[in-house]
Image 1 (cartoon, rainbow, N blue to C red):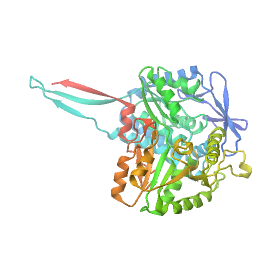
Image 2 (cartoon, rainbow, N blue to C red; image 1 turned 90 degrees about the horizontal axis):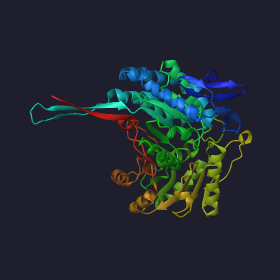
Image 3 (tube, one colour; image 1 turned 45 degrees about the vertical axis):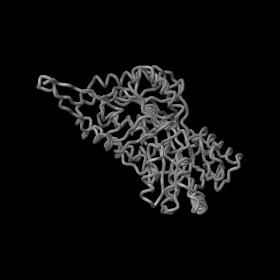
Image 4 (cartoon, helix red, strand yellow; image 1 turned 60 degrees about the vertical axis):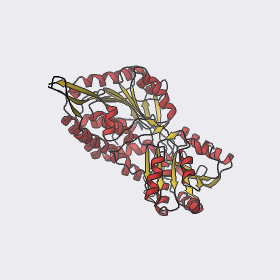
Length: 497
């Protein structure tokens, strides 16, 4: 990974600064906090804390860029630059991979297959959307017979505040920054305080390919009464996009109400998987293994509630437990590792509290439930992959988002019953249905209260499709042309003929 500018080495640690107006700058308050490696709990480096003055400088730089060269660029010129950004990420693949692994501790095989390639691809996908999207036009008849022509014009919304999460740091940040820039906006990004590296490193890429100063800015820090709040409360920010927990989304929404600014939220979830007896059993097992345990369960679209039709319930539980118990926890570079640590000590304490609560409530612990022995990695934030059965439907384990490598499995007897169980939640982000009956697949999917529903698959993503949650899982849709509804203002031009 680069240590020249974005991730500047100071002795044996890495100093991570803000990226404002094309420059890497120290926080004006002089305060830093530690960046900790989830694998072993060791200090990776220090991160500069943004003050209100730092955030104001970033927003001012973004505003100036809108009025400068970036604001005057044609769509074709922006598209060319965004393609160059993607190509430069690919060229520096190893730097981004090392930074992402250092921050998250996730297996190299996972980050190399998903995080970095998708992080780069997001720029090209949205560049293509903007280049090819049509707008509407109408001819209006008028009393004088001459008529009028109406046509739509998409304009950038302005300065976008981007608050991105720690579970897929590069991928989910570029999922927001890609369309924002493609539409001609400028951005101020606050990555999670747990995972600052790839967002910061992207500043080098922006400079290298010629993105004008101030278009892409990064500030670091925590949320309440810190960088996150300073950004969302700033009157110079025109819209805010956020991925994270629902309570934080509520706080951001309150801040955005001042000035009546747009928000786009992907928030929490308690996602169900429904497994019917007529499913392809092996495919359902493999898909559920991924949806429960991928990225150590730290996936907003992941499964925490599994409902299995009674004729195959015992077999499904036993098979899933056997595979879960064989997951390999270990060093990121070990090609056999397929489960990494949780992101932080604080998050592990939260997940472990649910493990303890499940035991106290009388759950049958099918596998896992504790802290594994990890040898030289014992200082990291490890938990065992865990499966429970036997809890009531109103248990905290069944109703509250845990965000760890765990699930509760419950039998069901009818389609109506399982639809009621699946929808009995304040959340509505994602769901998975496993069945060999095509009619049932369509019928059940139509009645599930979720923004994203997979049938006989999981995390199969077409980036042109609508992405987002319902109920307490979010506001708005992004992806493909749907992103344009948030990142642009649509004006109608009426020309009297």
